Length: 192
Image (cartoon, rainbow, N blue to C red; front, side, top):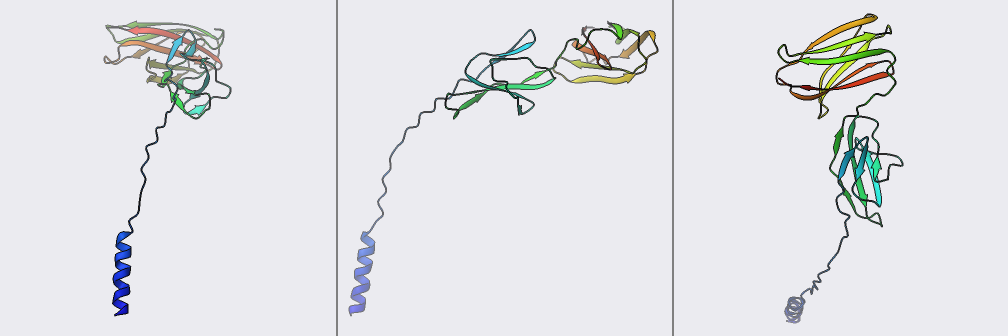
């Protein structure tokens, strides 16, 4: 009888024990910096905010690139991250795909002229070559998509290269002509 009495008492005692849980609501306020926006002016990328910034190129942080403006030197994808003062919160800008244009060296080795013939769908490159070295020609649209890339051997003197352009390619295109360390860029409208 004592054994049954002990089991019943133990059961009654265990049944009355219920875990108590206190629920508290905790409000957390995060002061996230506003999302920076980038604009391209002349040769610089400019963020619309100051403070703690870090510029990135193709996924890598650029060393000592933490000012509101940055001059891109290579084609690729750039963005900026803004941090709050404690470096605990950040906001990232949209990425910009930059196609760097411009002449990287004085025009010494060759002179070039580019024209588009809409009826024949032909791009004509008139080139005066002064050096015995291959010349690379690259055509890209404004989004950076390469439409044509080829290395050519031209004789010294005046040359003409005609490149057929498919009819679906329209709008502004960038033509880069390079030889050794000389690079010349042309911008042309493919309009039919």
